[in-house]
Length: 455
Image 1: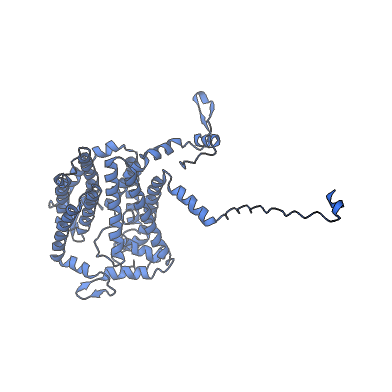
Image 2: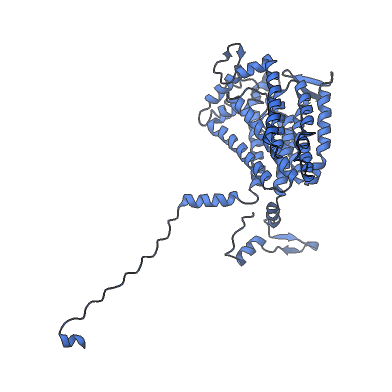
C-alpha cells in the first residue's frame, strides 16, 4: 500500500457540495383564495347566478323594508299596518311569474313581443291623458285606475317597450349593415323615443323621462354611434331638459335642494331631502334595528317609495346600505358581462338596455337620497313600493336570465347538470339506477385535464 511506503497518511478528499434544492413556495392562503375566487368568477354560470340571486335578494329585502317603512303611513290613512306590504307581496308574486316566463322564453319570442308591447304602452300612455280615465298622483298625471285601490302607471311599461323594440330595431339594421349611415342610426329610434318622452312629460313626470333618455343613450352607445352624433342628441336632450326645469318652479326648487342641510334653504322647501340625510346619519354602522326608524313617523315623506333607501340606512345602518349597493353592483356587472359575451346583436342591445335602465334608475334614486342629485321621484328598482314599477322590472330581469342561460358555455354547463338523486322510477315501478355524473366521470378519466368549472 502507498501509505506503508511513505509512512504518511493518505490525503483527505474534499466532498463536492451539491446545489441546494429550491424550497417549495409557501402556501399563501390569500393567494390561494384569490385564485379560487377568480376561477369561480370566470365560470360560465356566474352571470346567471348573479342575476338570479342578486335580483331575488333585492326583492326580498325590499319586501322587508316596505313592511317596516309603510306601517306608520298605513295607520295614518286608517288602513291596516300590513296594507302596503300585502299589495307589494302580491305584485312580487305576479312579477315572479313574469320573471319565470321571460327566463324560459326563446329569444325569437322576445323579439316578437317587442312591437305588441310598444303599441300597448303607447295606447295606455295616451289613455292617461283622456279626462275621466287618467288620474293624477302627487301632481303627475301618469296613472290609470283599475278599480278600488289598484292603479297602473303605463310609463313604467314604456321603459320595457323601448328596450325590446329598440334592441330589435338596431339588431335588424345591423344585420342589413345599415348602421353605417347616421339616418338609419337615428330613424325611427329617436323619433319614437321622443314620442314616448312627450307622452310622459304631458303628465309632468320628468324622473321617468330621464330614465327613458338614459335607455336611448345606452342603445345608441351600444350601436356604435359616432361621437358627433351622440353629442348632438345629448345636446338636444340637455337643451330640452334645461327649458323644462327653468319653466317649472317645483323642479327649480328640487335643484336648489342639492346638498341642503336645513329644511328651509332660501325659498326652497327641502324638508324631504334634509330628513333623508337625517335618517342616514342616525343609522350609524349597524342601524337602530328593523322597525325602529324615527323618521318614518311622519317626518320623512314617501318613506316606503322614493326614500326607502333612507329608512334602510336608519334601520340597517351603513352595513345594510352597502349591502344594497353591492347587490346592485353585482347585478350591473352581470348584465354587462352578458351583453359583452354574446354574439347575438339583439341580446347584446337588450341586455345593455336593461342594465342601463336598472343602473341609471338606482343611481338617480340613491343619489337623490344622499343629497347628490335632485329628487326625481323615481323608485329604487325591485326595492321600493310600487307594483307598476316592479312588474316590468322583474320581466326585464327575466330577460337577463334568459340571455345568461343562452350563452353557449352556460347551455353546456346546464346540460351537464344532473338531479341530485341517483335513482328514478322506471315503467312498471322498477327502480332504475342513474349513471354517475358525467363531469365527475370525465375528471376521473382525465385527472390532468384542466377543469372546466361548469357547475
